[in-house]
Each structure stands twice: as structure tokens, then as C-alpha cells.
Length: 356
Image 1 (cartoon, rainbow, N blue to C red):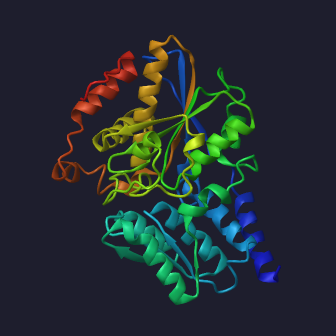
Image 2 (cartoon, rainbow, N blue to C red):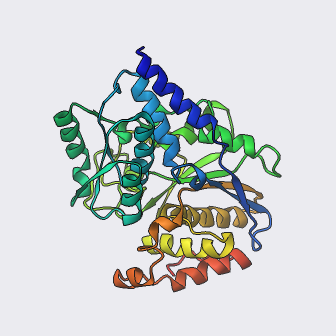
């Protein structure tokens, strides 16, 4: 191993050593007193999202595989948050970084990437980010990180302080330390793969539910068994949902999937601001919809227990979209009926399966 690679690994490990783990935040549900809900708050990472963990793992993976060397240009295909985190680590190592992203990516995320010294290469069709990234890497003799392929293998799912391991350690003293469900979305599929493999390896009864937004193929592929399904355009919820089934999505470790209307995700982040006192990103809203469905089912079955989900990133990155009334109106999203539905569920424990 070269001295530069050894120093690079040490810098990344030192960055990790400076950080405490993220908090596990309980949210009491007055209408469902027998069910405990917890949010793993990934917004408190240095780069503000769950993707900080992935970026750290991908850099270590690339360094230890000999793919990243002194001066290597780093290129990534991303919908935003992974690119922000990778830009941070690229700056830490003194490497150039280019993010290939859909043109619809929030301005706040673009500014964050540029803040860390990265450059943004925007494309009109989200489906082209893979090929454009490969082409740039070839032209620059750089390294295409390819989070969508390597997310599930760059993380040590057996332990090593991965997100699953930290959640179960933090749950140890709770009334129901082994959750009935862990709820997460899928962008690369790496997070659900980590959870699913970890609970099997540890022989735990916890089940993993993946929530999928509109205009994403994971849900259809999961229930059809077809991995070649595709769609055009973006999902409408930054960070999750894909137009193709990514290599890192491992359906065999997922126990259940729920499709979530985008308007329900947008309304959920407004509701969560009421009860958590903070803004969350759209994927957290998608997670919360899934939590509501699963908690309602547990209540109907007379079950008690806990559910853990993720607070994936800070909602201040979406002030010009999900939190902007003009943006919602312009795109035809009426969140009022969904807010009523969430409030009724939260306070009274009533969840209607009918469309709001």
C-alpha cells in the first residue's frame, strides 16, 4: 500500500473517530400507546444525511481496492445527498470531484456540493446519469464510484458500526428492544440490504419494510420478480426510487414493500414538523407513511412492539420544493387531506386505507 493511500484511510477513519453516533429519537404516538416509534436521525452527520455513511464506505472500498490514488478524479451518479457526502470526503483527501445529477436536483444540494469543492454536471434525463458518469471517468482517467452497484458490498453488514448495528445497540434498554419492523426507502438498495442481512445474521425477528415512491420500479420488481423493469423520469422524492432496479437492491432480504403516493410523502414532512419540531426531507415522509400502515396493522392485530425508521436528511434542503406552498400548488399537490389523515392517526389511532 502506498503511503498516500495509508494516509487517506487514516484521514477517513479519523473523521469517523471525531463523530459520535447519530441519535435515536422516540416519537410517542398518543393514539397507539402500545406501539413505540423511533427515528434514527441521520441528518446530524457532518454532511447532513444518511449518505455520509455510504460515502465513507465507498471511499474506503475504493482506496483498499486500489481504485483511488493520489490525484484521482472522483465521479459519481447521484440524486444529490450521496454527492454532497462524497464531495466532503474528496475535499478531505484533496481529490477533484464531479457529481452527475438530474437537472431537477434541489438548488440547496447543488450549493452544498459546490461548498465542498465539487463540480455539478447536470443532465435532463435521470436515466443517463450512469452512462455520463462512466464517460467522464474514462475521459479524465478517474474513478466512477458507482454507488448503485457497490452500496451493498462496501458496507460490512455483519457489524463494524453499520447503521443496523448501531440501532440495535441503541434499542437495548427500550421497552421493546427488538423492533417488529425497520422501515426504509431504497435509492441504491444498500441500506435495506444492510438491515436485511444484519437481522438474519444476528437471528433477530425484526422484519424489513421498504417504501417506494411513485414512478419507481423497486415495488413492481419486488412483487413480479422481474429485475429488468424500467420507467422514465424521476420518482419525485429525492434520494429514493429509481427508474431501473439497481444492482445493490437485494429483494431476498426484504420482507415487505409499500408503494407511497408522492403527495403523502410531502404531507408527511409537514406533519412531522408539527410533532418533531424540525423539518425532514421527503424520503423521511415516505418512511412515515409506511410506519403508519404497519402500525395500524399491528394495532388491528392486537400487537404491541416497536418500529424504527430513518430521518434521512434535513428538510432545509427542500425549502423551495416540498416546503414551498407555491411549488406544491404549481405541481397539483393538495396536502391538506393528508395532513388531516396523519393527525387523526397520530392522536386517535385511526388510519383509513382509502385514498384521502
